[in-house]
Image (cartoon, each protein chain N blue to C red):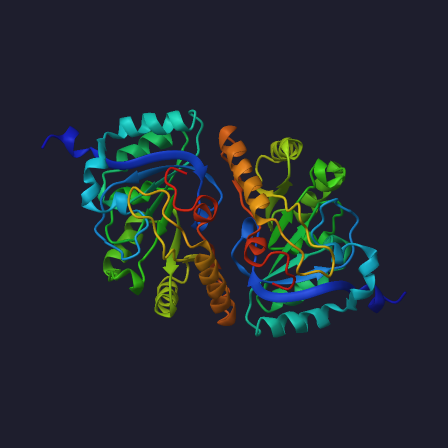
Amino acid sequence: MTAAHEAQIRVSEIFGPTIQGEGILIGLPTVFVRTGGCDYRCSWCDTLHAVDSDYRDQWRPMSADEIWQEVSRLSGNRPLTVSLSGGNPAIQPLGTLIKRGHRDGYRFALETQGSIAKDWFADLDVLVLSPKPPSSGMETDWDAFDTCLRMAGEKPQIALKVVVFDDRDYLYAQAAAARYPDLPVYLQPGNHTPPPPNDDDARVDIDGIMDRMLWLVDKVTGDRWFEARVLPQLHVLLWGNKRGV
Amino acid sequence: MTAAHEAQIRVSEIFGPTIQGEGILIGLPTVFVRTGGCDYRCSWCDTLHAVDSDYRDQWRPMSADEIWQEVSRLSGNRPLTVSLSGGNPAIQPLGTLIKRGHRDGYRFALETQGSIAKDWFADLDVLVLSPKPPSSGMETDWDAFDTCLRMAGEKPQIALKVVVFDDRDYLYAQAAAARYPDLPVYLQPGNHTPPPPNDDDARVDIDGIMDRMLWLVDKVTGDRWFEARVLPQLHVLLWGNKRGV
């Protein structure tokens, strides 16, 4: 395997600019670079097309330069925030891409579950750590999570984001927040109608999501958990399960 | 008029905790202290019950201590963010209330159009300045607005929030943002179906608001205005025009 080959990044999709739909950067114009492949397989994954290896033939190996050309084109060479998401983008060699973009004044946010740490986390502008609650069917490796935080160090703005479907998830979110009292926490009602891969038109139960949102607001205010922010996925409210927006 | 009388605050409603529905603190559990009275009369005002003097008999003069008792009760004596809104809360003598709350570890955000400045702005934790665009029918006094910023000084986190109904409003928002390049800007699609005072059940055209939201996202991304955040009024999506949530 040559060095050039090692530097290839598996890309599921690049799209935008659109607004960031969730978490700490909600509402901010963003270009998304979604990588393919994940070490997790959450029961309610809403990006299976970037996770399930059945869709691997849709993932394109690209160099940092090729990705950068596309991001530059989409943004008209005007600096903005690039969201590196997945799948789990921490699997990919993204350090060169981030350095390249920083040279042009762009900012980078990474969204990951915190299962795999990379030294280039330290170059990020924003790191969103999204540990997966019990309803996902996954187990959190808190040592790996701590390593992500250590690797990120002092430069990036760091936030926790936890998807909450039910009471067990909520307790998990509280425990996660208690582990990291200095990190801002964002709670997000889960989408129990995630899109099947390659089906933009699949029905989304917005009313059900909004009911879960209301339940979550009641939980947080009833428990006087006044540090947690509760935000829906705005892009789902605006565009349903449609991809590329 | 005695000193005690001068310190009375005209209160339209105190409610919460619920989540902040808009702008820089979106999603954050908050108790709202809505004061009565306004020097503006925006055509699309969505809180006429706190603006129109026809509803003045519903505004209760309260001392800072009385308000503080109610905020403490609602929050179970647990510190959170208090949003001072209106009407225009800058009309009221809120300095004592803020000092009182700070003693207990609470934080204060003020939401005002920026037409009236007070020295106690400097004690705020967050100042949201929301200049009103042409569709409101109001004229912005930028000198008064600058005075608000000067009074606030270095301590508060300051953000601009502009409601946008149409192209003229959008151009106004761009000009406002250009005047204050260091301030974060939040754009908010207007609600063209604001509640008549005292009618919780009045119909809200959520689809129309979401259409305006999509239009605004397209404008911002199309113009490559990548610093502006676009956020809807979450409370309207969740609760319509209902009061007290």
